[in-house]
Length: 133
Image 1 (cartoon, rainbow, N blue to C red):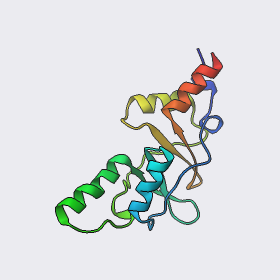
Image 2: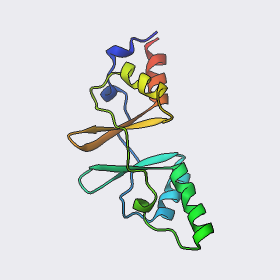
Image 3: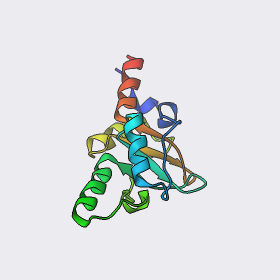
């Protein structure tokens, strides 16, 4: 069994991410999520500052709002979640595993010096355990 305290987020995070800007048209973002098979993506301002996350659940709001209010969808900023729990690259996988156990999230964005540098998922932690066994 892997010693998760000996592994850092930096060594196991995904760096090449699908991201959106707050101005991205939400229907375009939904299309990108469907096409990529991702269940959500970080939302960043110019310069890489993380300002939110757009999840499948957030995207479902688009259909509900359009059905009830009869309005056309808007920008990602109108539907994204702005309260985002982040990790640092030097956090250990043990800390991350505990965060996953205490939250409903499947992934956390990784932020360094205020900028998005990656993302780590439950699957990334499981892969580290498997590869170290």
